Image (tube, rainbow over all chains, first blue to last red):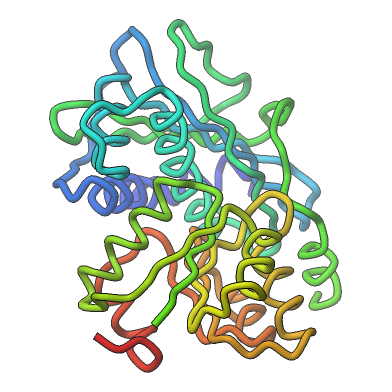
Length: 170
Length: 121
């Protein structure tokens, strides 16, 4: 089974991850959604999962409309008017939590990158076939796209001593 | 009681502090650090009674931080608060001397259940 097929089989669990994470960080009810993210400015966070079993990379990316991203940052950081740095920090952490849960769901011997985040519009989708799930919270959409084999360019990784520990335990 | 919260995300440090209060652990001094290296320095300098640390961080990961602490004979209670809650990571955390691993997203109950034995209300 390919990573994509494995991800497609756990799509309900991916839905649950997004809903649980949004519910937790925003303290609001979130629900699955099946419509496309509207065009316009978005805040995004991207992380990679390196699966040591087959030396493959899977990229998890979260996209949030900028209005919701500012609400998210405000709620997480207790500020009425969050700046771009606050928005990037909050969305990076949202991506980190989602990607960490995706890693625990589909890989058992894997390593997670550090999050990279940005704000922009007209952002192209990552190359490759992605499994996408969306949720609606406070009337806004959030998308999690998980793309096996996507480029990991620009992503940073934590120090590697932990990998050596995993190697010894194998 | 002094609690050191270590996470590279300012937003998550604030959520951890808020959840401590919501779990009923009020009135404690909270200090913060942005990665394991800074956490190690602050643990040695400030002697906290509890460390709550993320795992995946730049400069020094949480597991390296914990091993450095235990390697120097420091037995400060240490709990991970991390987005990765697999059995493998829980086992690695326990083997290194952590009292637990709270997986994100978390609830007040998870904090009470895991930290209740070391943190007073």
